[in-house]
Length: 187
Figure 1 (cartoon, helix red, strand yellow):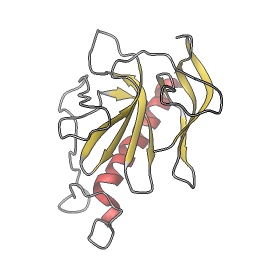
Figure 2 (figure 1 turned 180 degrees about the vertical axis):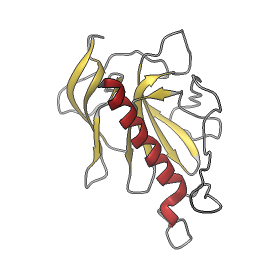
Figure 3 (figure 1 turned 180 degrees about the horizontal axis):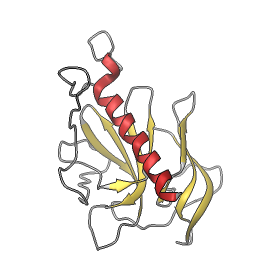
Figure 4 (figure 1 turned 135 degrees about the vertical axis):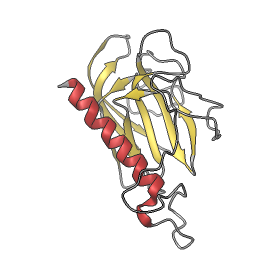
């Protein structure tokens, strides 16, 4: 069951990335909110947009909050994703590789944004396997961050805030299990 859920979440993230980079045929000067990117030369063709040709690659995080051509999340499965009002892809966590690989693939809690053909590391850790930092319930803080996880429910509200609920991953004590925490991120 868990592997099917990971596969479904991964497929949704890939579909969101393909929609973003293909712009659904809406990339044009008259649509300034679409994110420019490679467009297939004809229908029914794939375009490789980002990432390595080989499996199990570590991420290249660059500078927090700064887009760069060399930035890329590490290989992972079960990541959560959102599409914001500007057509940017947001990616959180999953199980896989951070900036280093120590022979394990822990749950990640890194937050990424894909816009204009480049990745930006927006938050969380560049080292996997970290527990959540919850802070005070209902109070936003720069130190608050969900623990690494897979398979959470995600949505974007009418104000453009990103929401994350539950999944399977690391709680505030470092224990792994089913989670029921609800998080809001304001981009």
